[in-house]
Image (cartoon, rainbow, N blue to C red; front, side, top):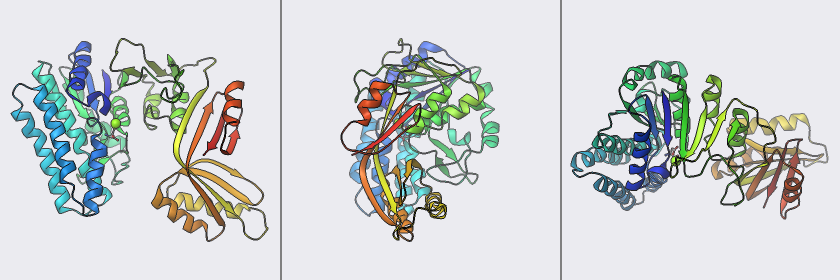
Length: 413
Ligand code: ASP
Ligand code: MG
């Protein structure tokens, strides 16, 4: 069997749903599990509603717009939309109840934002049925079991494998439509797997069902060696080793969610990244392979913050002081994207998240004089050549740079 994943961009309007259905229909009538994201920018909208609600502001307008957006898609897709609209509205009503009865928390966040995926999967499922494609709608919360770490649920693989196993017999006759991004705690609350986590959901289903392959359908022609919006000469990789793809995601390439590669690589399941507007394009195959002479791979990670900790008393930075820094980072669950030490200071770069940053600075100020810069971009060039090495090092506004034999990183203003 195969697993397909369609993201929000592919399902952003009725034309998108029709296109997704035609891609599905062109493949097979069974042995396919399809993971979908919320339509278009729905998750951002739901986050907006939550943030308005938590600051006691009126969210009704945004909520009504979101409802209308989905209603219009349904009206456009179905001759008799009533029953589908009713199903969609059950989730909107649940959402309103959640907002009215619970105070803001990470737990509430997950109960609210999950609605986007539930609704999009319902619409696609009914659309397939209306085209006489035997589709089975599966609530992925009954498959993916997580802990109670709301907003970033950690998967219980053993339980998940047991819960997903019964889908095998359904797949013998039907196509399964399910949601990305969501799971469930042992006591029945919805969890999410982190923003953009639908790719990871696809990998979880594929791993538990021993899929022959996974295809992530995107608006780009495949995995490219740079963001084509920044670098128009970017080219598509025909194939990539798992390891290379995993490292790309680590450095911030957003084409695949970082957690996606590991479960697939562990089981040797190839991952294809293909274009949903032109499925005839070859796309990229990510699998166990060696590729000679990969071109330089350039990743831009924006919204970075550089922190410098200076010792105040003319001593040198000691290992004990470094321990203090790492301890603070680990306590706040902050990941380092780059670091460098000198005689009297230690500098590092992290993703900018205001509330965490303030807490971190407070902790660091107990030991150091702390300076920081925000609004920076970390550029990573993997497999650099002479030309790219020179270009990126010599650009204006470099605050920090570092290179190994294969990778150059520069932090720029
Ligand atoms: N809808 C979720 C998000 O936008 C999950 C996903 O798209 O992968 O983050
Ligand atoms: Mg998405």
